[in-house]
Image 1 (cartoon, rainbow, N blue to C red):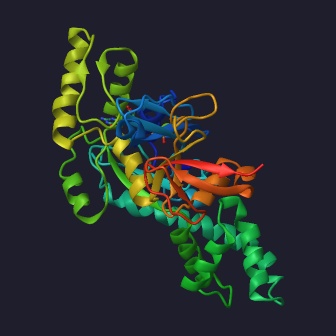
Image 2 (cartoon, rainbow, N blue to C red; image 1 turned 120 degrees about the vertical axis):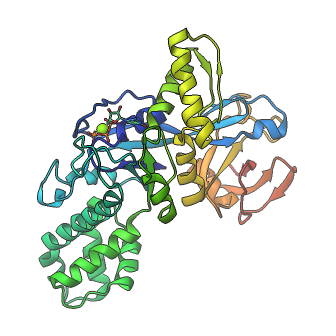
Image 3 (cartoon, rainbow, N blue to C red; image 1 turned 60 degrees about the horizontal axis):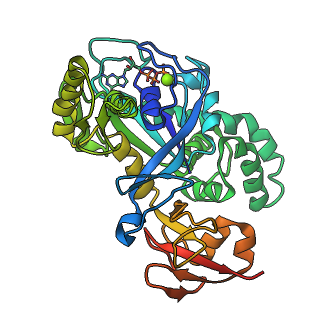
Length: 386
Ligand SMILES: Nc1nc2c(ncn2[C@@H]2O[C@H](COP(=O)(O)OP(=O)(O)OP(=O)(O)O)[C@@H](O)[C@H]2O)c(=O)[nH]1
Ligand SMILES: [Mg+2]
């Protein structure tokens, strides 16, 4: 599971990345601070099964705070993209290759409109213009890859359509497009003549099947000059203050406050007067107004609402709900809705999948078969042969 963070320069991509991962990537108020992609681990937050089952958990692959389980996901923060990147402007668009593994992209918008299309500080810029440009640059990125390789694909034209799809899959494998996505794009934008017009339409179709792109309105702590109210009427664009989330997580790890990422409140544990004042500002202008800083909620929205994943807990001992070493609810896995007991067995280990005999739903104690569809929060013991 991997989330990519994209957008024009200077919108707060690395700040959001740091807030979600505490990785310490460089942040500055000028464009192209990030050149090489940053990769680190962030978390999706779910209600831990320990509360429902009234046990004390001992997580291994994740962590639990006050009944919330934080399940790891890879987060990648890339360089800023500017209009004309496909022609080499800014840092170009080759770095989009870094996102080929990403399941979904978060497109960060500077909602206060204080940075222009190149990420340079300006008094006023319409953030709505940034919403469309990213899609257009990605379209052109695909178009260029297609154009560069079209002769290779055409050489296969004397063969069947399946050969052509295979050849397209080969040339597009670098950008993380699968054969079935190419089929899907073909249905939306059939290609016969291989001219520029068809290739462009095909590039647009490829981008639409490529991966979901979810917007977020960052810098919500600033005066947004009505931009937020205007854009939220048209787009699914959750409000975020990456800077506040980063400040709260830092204050939490320094022992200043008691805060669980995603919460609507925190309590002060040991802050001096100046720190308490800054924290109060976050409380008043962000948490009270928007319900949270939006950063954790954004990840959860992406993971659970858009990608429709669920969290399940494989265990080896159905009575103790533990692994062999006695760690209770050691692992939480994020799996697609519709995952069966057999799918989970394969996810735990190919060998366990191959030797699958049955499974136990540890909440009810009932035996379940290979086709049993799992639900969010299920605790499952897989029974495998030798
Ligand atoms: N007010 C406010 N400023 C923010 C917020 N998030 C980021 N910033 C500021 O915006 C500027 C740019 O932040 P970065 O995280 O470096 O932005 P970026 O998108 O990674 O920039 P590039 O790497 O250059 O593309 C910095 O001055 C941040 O402190 C926020 O939520 N509110
Ligand atoms: Mg950056």
